[in-house]
Length: 88
Image (tube, rainbow, N blue to C red; front, side):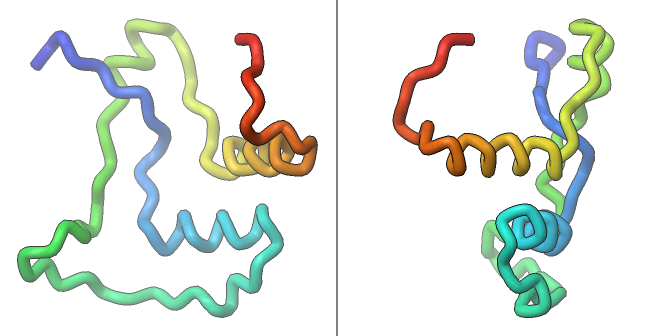
């Protein structure tokens, strides 16, 4: 549908996201193991990425990297701002 635009970043596997999350939040990333998902009726598809080329073109923006977004989240937690409303 041409009326729908997606706002998302680059394609990233669950494994790579978990590794990045562990790195940013200082968890032991050695505990994360790569595995294969055999799609036997579950919702754990290997790639849940959305295409955002059209969104970037329309809005003239680049997306934030996953690591940068996680670091922003961590700063918010460290600043004890969870649960507060912030002006945009």
